[in-house]
Length: 118
Image 1 (cartoon, rainbow, N blue to C red):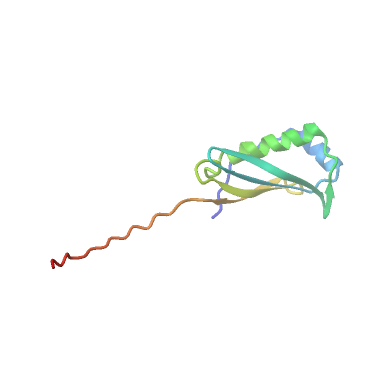
Image 2: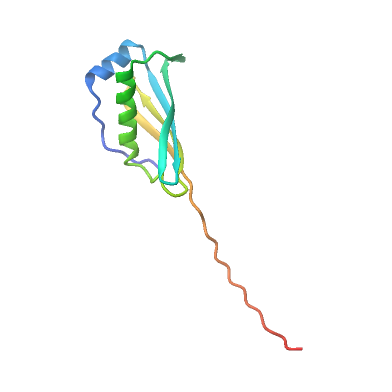
């Protein structure tokens, strides 16, 4: 299933900083349940290499953008919650979110029997 989320505004200065750092892909995992959730494990890639030294202002803008986009997805942080991965491709400025939602399923079954007096 593919759903388009609202387009995102990201300051051009942040995009330029990311491109100057050679960043081609940003990946992050998220998970939540019980009325809370968080994005974690941000990984910044320059092609296949991991880049560790990301300026705080850049990271904070990316984190804020990711949280903003998650507001348009399924309810990933309430009840049983959910989890997923966010990918921001700097080559074409696209964001892809792969999400899994946990839920409790109920199966109703009815049994009947007769009483046999002794």
